[in-house]
Image (cartoon, rainbow, N blue to C red):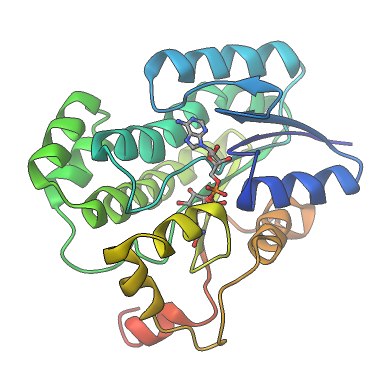
Length: 253
Ligand code: NAD
């Protein structure tokens, strides 16, 4: 059976995935700011290296999969924490765990969002993340002062990072893919719904399938991407959003 590391394992999508993997007999190393095997604040460089070291100790023979689910939504403040957690907390851990994944020819599933391809995202902010210049990313998002830029910008950077790295990682036997969830019923979504400005925007979001996803529905697709059935999936972004992306950009493909 496999060994999988999941960040953001305490609630929402990460917690649902944990249950599914454990039911299938796998071992899960959860990393979260609360209620996890490894407690770490992934919005800080210290927390990230602490998490990588902790995973290395627990999975010295290698990892079958890594899934960075820890994240906060567009309503979260301060915005520089959003960028540090959502982008650097995902990508720096993936980089730090690459050798462990290669050891078992594992897979990583990055967590994007169907907001990543929305127009109007700040190119300098996205580029600063792809250049791994965290100080600049934090400075730029404070100047921009907009939760959508912090959230969707960090998700766009995750997708581009994944696609830029997928070929080289494949050469080392690791499959890199991403899931782009739409509106999903989790504490992150609830925090948005409870916010006066964001609540209105989220409720107006088109969902052809009629209602938000349950976290298990997103975890199902992540589980598929981790499985041998997905052996030829590499560098792909899987939208799991009840059709919202098809409404927002039917011909932009
Ligand atoms: P969630 O709030 O249920 O889970 C996020 C987890 O991250 C929590 O367990 C939380 O404790 C942890 N976390 C928060 N700050 C942290 C920190 N500083 N260090 C370590 N852990 C921290 O949310 P979710 O909806 O399950 O989100 C999972 C992922 O899915 C996120 O990346 C989110 O952006 C993405 N996503 C969610 C939705 C949605 O509608 N829920 C839509 C698109 C994408």
